[in-house]
Length: 446
Ligand code: 9YW
Image (cartoon, rainbow, N blue to C red):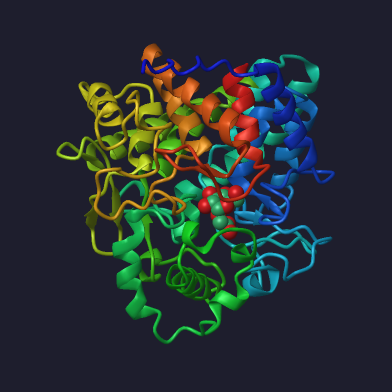
């Protein structure tokens, strides 16, 4: 028999936009947006930046409110915390909740504000600039004047307190990378295991974990991962979240996505400085200096992407993860770098443009330890896809950018506003009604 050709895919764009807006409205809690209702009932740092990029298409006022609320929890030392806990939510609704992070130190948030002691990738200055560029006017100028000094203090903290490995900026926990169980961290976490043997770890991690009540255990980090996550936090907490002698912590690495987003956002900060009459020069210099270190020390020509570094041992962590493609965002790439990254992106590891792959997976599909259902070890996520879509457009790779945008739209049209997606079947995974999926889709559709 003659097969019927597959029906052409015609997404209902107006319906998608409407549902994206409804998702963001549903997750708004009065001053900020939760990533998704039951699983993550507080405010997360880099989620809020992505959410603001989407809110820019609905209400610039709300976009600025989102980031103003986040910066209201900024620590005395400048760090912008990974999670701002909502005091109206029961302390055991999320694990590890506020009690685990206490005591917060003197250089912590204002009295009465409850947060974690970690940070997340700094994409906030870029988000503020994106909202500002879309909505010129007095209200925007006022919001930028208010936010610029806070953004600059966060970056000052990172550049001054988190410098490791001569000039690169480090992270002290897998949660700080935003890609918690990325294969990058297997080796340093394995090594940390020994250091953590004496840490006061909960013996019933499964019982404590709230995520397992809302998502399939096979799609989440393992209990062993969680045990180590808790141990690493405990070591940092017990020294008052002090950043002296970072290499003596059980985990200290350099992540290409974190450094690339910091360099990119530092360029955005230069533009925000210009708008407020402050000196853009120091931001541009810092951005260029960090990018130089990233390009010369973290690119792995044999893998065709950037890799992470274990700052404690100096060893490169040689895996192909989506984080190692994100430096494609940066202006002024060394010669040949753009084509090398695009070749990796469109080759068998990530499969952009191939018939069998949906969006850009979080990890090398050809790696023996890829797990296409498990969180950051294979599935396709909208935030990293949005970063690469933006990168491809900035580098003039229009055809690849268009293909990626259509994959993103199709994934959501087929499976909904899910937290992540199976990179081959497109099956929706993790939570539903996920804020950054909705927000970034709005931006792609704009
Ligand atoms: C956690 C909220 C966060 C994201 C992270 C993602 C996950 C687990 O969810 O973290 O419990 O914090 O890995 O990038 O910000 O969406």
